[in-house]
Length: 142
Ligand SMILES: [Zn+2]
Image (cartoon, rainbow, N blue to C red; front, side, top):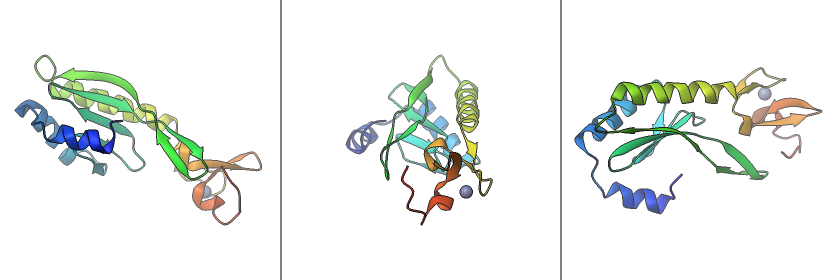
């Protein structure tokens, strides 16, 4: 993921009309909350990241890791790029959907409340996967 500074610098660079229309489509037509500008973080927790560069859009699978018990870092992996000349919005949406499906597969149910959670939001309690809310107050560290 680009740093906040890099993201801000990239924003100063205008996208091609094609890329801008794809970006607007993602912001308006997905049934997920979207954050970000040059890089769109889609879903909460983030399910897919779409990073816009000057002539292409890259689709990234987010992967969160716990470095300390309450700090996470993202190490997204690229699932593909769509060029604004040879590619299409359909190709981009297909990649985005594929990535969301892959991400959702990594989710697990909390053994206590049954909520499906992103792997980074699950800890374990006596060997059972347990969500953060259920762990809260139990003095259990991830
Ligand atoms: Zn739970």
